[in-house]
Image 1 (cartoon, helix red, strand yellow):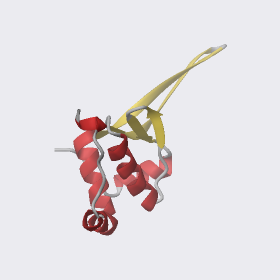
Image 2 (cartoon, rainbow, N blue to C red; image 1 turned 180 degrees about the vertical axis):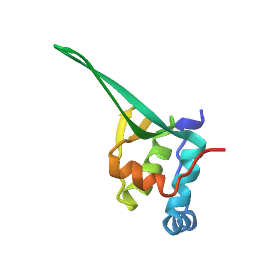
Image 3 (cartoon, rainbow, N blue to C red; image 1 turned 60 degrees about the horizontal axis):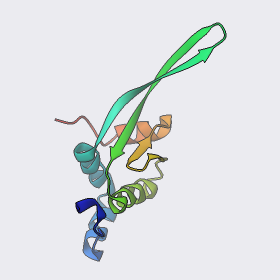
Image 4 (tube, rainbow, N blue to C red; image 1 turned 135 degrees about the horizontal axis):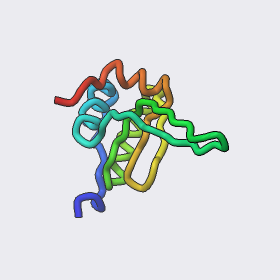
Length: 107
């Protein structure tokens, strides 16, 4: 299975990723990610409170690809969280704003 085999960047590939980190992240999000509005409901005594916020998610079964993605986010100082075994979330306001600067819409 593809997601169980070892995936790592060769030195020359890592040099390209280091030089073009924003473009690399954009490509990964355009292939295996999305930007969406996360809607949250909080039940309170006097009724439910709803709020929403934008977030990016990246989904991949491969731990190696997840690591390559999160290492690139770390290089750009973009905060992220592991949502579950295959999903990475970027949801902090400043992190989403930073990704918005260079990711752009999917076509």
